[in-house]
Image (cartoon, rainbow, N blue to C red; front, side, top):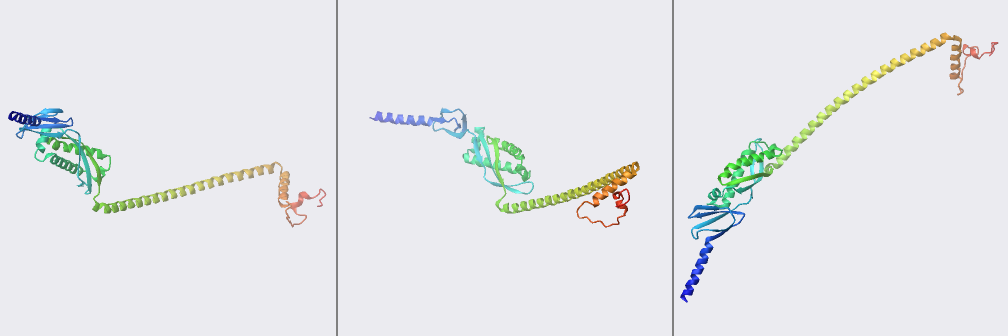
Length: 290
């Protein structure tokens, strides 16, 4: 009976020792095996692994690409404007030994705090050298690349590789928001008034030029019409003169007929003149009686 009890105790101890000797590394993890606090080896391949029971300790770290959001903080830009910036970074453990030494005292939470501080310092240093327009323009991509480069050295000392940095938003502080909006509104109104003034001035210049051009065109047209009219009158006079010279009697007769038609058109026209007036000479009979 005593032998059976001793055997059971030995089996329990053996199982306990075996359990203490085994550990599993997931495919998403890296592990550090320490012996009496000193690093013994690193384990980067997944599977069932062995360690010295009661002597070795195992620390496991995530080997995936991780996201680290930063707290909102205020940044003073080169144009003396202050914005509240919110950003995040994507990172992974590149050197598990350095990372273990960096976080051995404070753990993963301490590492994240350090990385957040590195990201915030890089954001302040890079953004503090540009004006606020840069973060709202196409230069934003270049700024994020500069911020990423600024974080790499400090992060590498912790065994971390920062893969990407993104600025989520950059807003005015609440205390300055209304005053800034009022100033921007006043600036836009002033710009609009300037544009309207320039437009009115340009419209007046165009109208004056058009009116001056219209007067010049009308004057030139009137002059040309007077010239043409004068030439036409001269031509008519010449034609009449030529016709008169060709047959004066017929010309007198033709002109008298035109005068009769104009004055005696039958529209209740009354003509009072002497019967022996020269106006009726072509209406007299050959004998001379009316």
